[in-house]
Length: 528
Image (cartoon, rainbow, N blue to C red; front, side, top):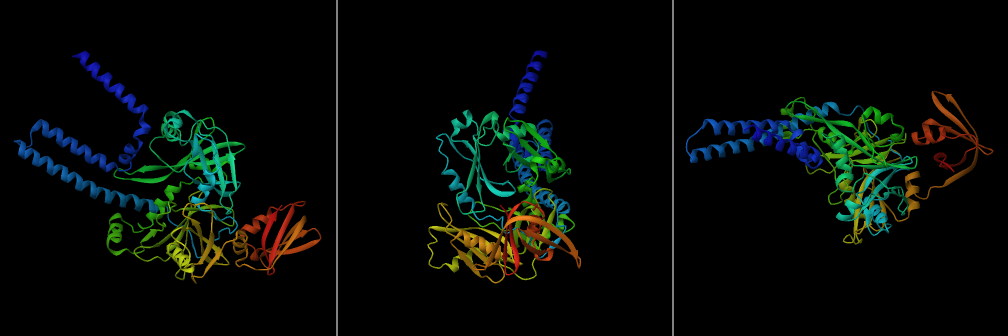
């Protein structure tokens, strides 16, 4: 008897150790229960009933027993549906209380010189066409930052199942999204752990070994001091007995040698490598914006409102069939990075209800609401197609409506590309208030429009060496005197964007600079 007990114990011990070692493979199943603890409680109760019935015989006869078991299972399914609805409402109500806008404005202060011109599909085509290795391909695209500017990033990964087991990731390829041209940077440093590899050098395998009860965000490539790092923010959960609430748990960083660091949010913000890098989870951003529908005090009130009244209910706008969901990574004039999500009212309305901005470094949330009705991104694409009635839309697509502000007006930037993604045919801008559509085929015209708000404006360029920068206060406003060669330029803070002020403050005596002036106003400052 004792030998049998030891044998059974050892069998369970070995089985448990095997499950523990291969626990990353079961992460999805485990997390589905961990995020919904009431499901665990329900199955425990069901198991207890089955055990009790086995021992005590609640009913006699197979027919009655089958009827009882069928009733119990029907009750379990119904309970699962009810619990799912209620626990989801409790979780989102708590999430809203943690994350809601701290400030509301009526204008986006976004940089017009660092916007996404190159669409995702075109970037992928440009990148994959440069891979000349027989055993390698590109992984999924991701938004990342290179030298303070958003770029498309692609890990160079083994191609095929056998190669994924044998080979290592070869590096990363960055594609500049601020141009329609195929401007790329390839960095070939072998990675010991990364996406696309399989079994023990797979990225998720190693990260879930390090930290298990979390949900990983999208892995992003970071190139810092000649080394590639894989940066993966993650979502953890606050346990509330009957439900859980998602939160920013931290950031995992993997270096080229495969070493994994687990940083808290506070440590991530202070880490020099992650300065000006998006470390707040992109996937959590969508959850937070969705939770803005749960603004009432109680979960039951929120369920009633979302099912019956739809008061202040919003929907995240995703243009269907394009595989590029919100949020978008945008740069403000002050250089800060934000996750941006545009939302529309619930139902068949396609107007713009609001734009939410979440600081990609800290998670602080703000909201932009508009006094006048504005066109949303879905209808913006319709206006572009209407402006090109003879265009062959069976061969081309209008993709990625991105919001930009020009002279206080909201425009939607829409790229028109071939169905294969091989290049950019046209760039269109749709005024969200007037519905005016401007279409450009030349990238220089696009940049001129972004810089000056019009094409054909007279621009004066002043180039030379900075001889001095002097500042003074007058009438509560900051003024500067910028001396370029022998010419003095008088600048005022109330006539400069935050982005231009930062560029002006970065100038030092001896710098080579070009200042562009249009209609008596400084519109660009470029170091050369």
